[in-house]
Amino acid sequence: MTGLAPRQTYPFALLANGNTVGNARLTTLPAALPTLGDKPFTVLLGTCFAYHEDQEGKVGNAFLHMPLSANPEIKLFAGDQVYLDSPWYRYLVPHTADELRNAFVEHYRNTWGQTDGFARVLTEGANFVLSDDHEYWNNAPYFVAYASNTWTAGGRTEWFGIARELFNAFQTTQSITRFAVPPVSFLVADTRINRDANRNRFMTAVDLGQVRDWVNGLQGPGVLVIGQALLQGPASFLRGTFSDWNLPDFAQYYDLVRIVGAAAHSLVILTGDVHFGRVAHGQLPSGAELIEIISSPLSLVDRTVQGTWVEAPALPVAPPTSGAPIPLSVMNTEEDFGPTDGHFLTLEFTRRGPGARLRLRYWPAFAGGVPPPDFGKTIFERDLI
Image (cartoon, rainbow, N blue to C red; front, side, top):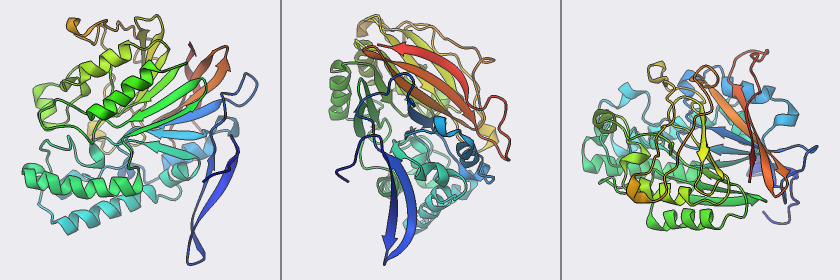
């Protein structure tokens, strides 16, 4: 689409044989951040949505009840927008390629076609997405899970190929996406699809080079969106083998830490995966601030995997040989902000001098017509340089 004015809302319709089969609206990006007094540039962050546990459409209901002044202009979905490997017991027996394909298409249809639920969120405003393991299977793409099709290399290749085709069709073909609302720049980087079997990398050298160039070229605050938390420790052997490996379990993690540590401007990392919400922050070697914001889940796949809030590492996340470490301080306690039930967050950006003001708000999912008392609560504010 060309010739669209900045920060204008446009309706879109999808036609088939002259009949409307789908509708959506989007708001174009502003030419620059709004100033104090105007509506902030607002971004929604959400991860981990399983429709099985949201038959009431609680996520869509929460989105519907947001005041107009808080409505997001774009949405960032940082992984697990579907749980193709659920329900888990369905995949204890082998499936043919056709059976997998049919099951996965039906799963997307049930998830993204939830008219009064998740679909309500998807159709209002632009979506920027990346994948995590459940776009494929738990601990994809090279490691074995409970699904019997993943017990052989051939089975994993077949499953991943089918799921990747659908991810490309429903979500995105891009592993790196960049856009800017000056002075803030955004980069969305997939850390799942290009993992290797030896746990050396979670993205290609070319993609990592794009992240490095982006960080080094920042002229103002940066927002980096990734599929798993940067500020966490490695997984235990049992968890990594039978559940999922974390970013620190890959050799490339320390390359990413060095890149992040070289940022001259405020860097905000947005992520999910862990089934709890958290905000952590620390000072970068340049004096600017590193802030990591986790929003997870939108809707749990199963109550048995409800997360437990974990504090960000208190020690530097980089080994001594990797250059300047990143010391951290944690701004919150579990009592202050550590939700483990369905929710999403919004980030509101306004211009402040050469930088930006960030306001972070919490939106719990709920059923019915009366929002909970903490609906839209401000949980964090910062000046970004």
